[in-house]
Amino acid sequence: MSPPGSVEVLEGRTRLLVPNTFSSGGPGKRIGQVFFNSQMAFNRDVSVMFLRARPVRSALDAMAGTGARAVRWAVETDVADVTANDRDPQAAEYIRTNVALNGVEARCHVTNEDLRCMLARRAFDLIDLDPFGSPVHFIPSAVQAVKRRGILAITATDTAPLAGTYPRKCRRRYGALSKRSPYGHETGLRILIGHVMREAAKEDRGARCLLSFYADHYVRIYLQMEEGGSAADRCLSRMGYVEHDPVSGGFCYGPEDKAGSAGPLWLGPLHDPELLSTMDASDDLSEAGRCRKYLGLWRSEIDTPFFYDNDEVSSTLGMSPPRMEPLLERLNEIGRASRTHFSPTAIKTDLPLEDVLSIYREASRRGEA
Ligand SMILES: C[S@@+](CC[C@H](N)C(=O)[O-])C[C@H]1O[C@@H](n2cnc3c(N)ncnc32)[C@H](O)[C@@H]1O
Image (tube, protein in one colour):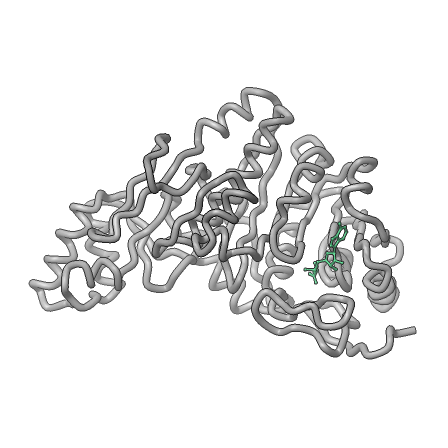
């Protein structure tokens, strides 16, 4: 029987009964008891693309709400052993209903526990954390319960602390100072990755970033665990700090903690190119067009930390922003440069600020700006 006050929606190939008061944007309000945000369809699509490219034997949707993510995995991927857990009994009711609605009882098991208790007893190949706000309270249990070479998938919607609006809250939660800058969301993403890496190091484990991104109101990471103290040490050696110079629009990053810099944060790669090459934004996804667009951006994005914002650099030089395509072409003649998924007006490049500025001045002289 459907829970009272519910409506049916189709997401990807999966039918879902959700509360008729569901959220459709932003971090999502807790309207009613059970949470569902239709704007997170893209986030769930990416998890489907991920699991199709990197199948696992057992996957836990640790905070499942209506079970949207877990039931989609059971319907739309080959994962044979999906567990959907939520500590809220009404959420568990929704999950059971959605499992039955899609006829996936044999592949999707429903549990109704505090996930920290569950993770003290059970281990999984993939653990997905999708809490209200910050995941920090659940990261130690998840790091301990993910199997050897298993995968942690984590969403954080507390982007205000992570991206520098509340730096002290970020330091309390993540043990890292955030800082406002044009690349604040990338800083927040790297602080989250760094935090998980440091938790993993306590267990003599390292991790490799398979995919990490910012979208809408959240950051999201997929990390594959690597085993042993030397893997942990390798990860810790890639931690550092970033310092922003608002006068020049430039930044510098490195292992040293200078006064006013953000960190500690992860300075290693955000994506695994091999994984990205095997992910497919197929037409049956809920937001196939958006998935294709992001997949293209992730694949072409050069994996160097942080970026220049076209508007900010132009304003420091007192000129109008040049067109992105000719600018990228010119930058690529002397170094490497690309667009980035973090912002449509941003450029990632391995060139030093001086070279970037001289190309801007050149563009201005040629009347391209
Ligand atoms: C943001 S919602 C999850 C949304 C869901 N993943 C989706 O894609 O629709 C967070 C969920 O975490 C659950 N939750 C919060 N603390 C928990 C805990 N300690 N153990 C298990 N579930 C918890 C809440 O009941 C809520 O349903």
